[in-house]
Image 1: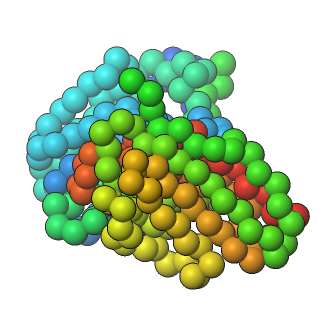
Image 2: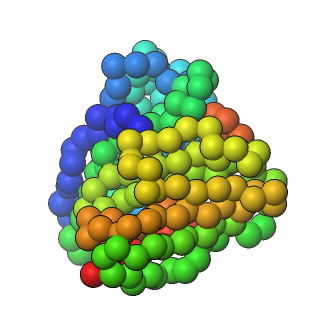
Length: 111
Length: 112
């Protein structure tokens, strides 16, 4: 399916730093999801967002559903080495099988 | 509750052979999705099954096919394997259309 625009493509940060990544589209979505994929494994759901403007946290992770419904943001605070992986956003539309994935952000945390 | 399971974890085939990959969804989930993820790339949608029927198909040739069984488990078949079919094949399941997808660990296919 169609890919969402996700940025940055990759990040190299020091342990303890905060991380921000985002996902944008030219179309409106009804649900935004963020997944993390460790090397060689399947993506694991981190956060799901269901309403425009919604801000949801999961430990050190915080994600927001953009007001325009065309974007979403994921922030990771005080990064640790196990945050390493690829982060994917995904959007769902309520019409048809409209499930789209972002292109992924590869995160490397330097101890 | 058990998550999505996939088998085998690894599969090695030679060019021209056929590969069969299997997926068991989370209990109660009726939709199963298949994705191909080549090394270092994003997820490419392959197939979606719901209630035993193919509902949607990605931009892949007909040699990629599959089916969903009455117990909602699914099989992905890849015929006439090519070198570029080497990838991680991910299965996901959901309660139904427009619901959150949960992924299995994947099957890593290597075509020599």
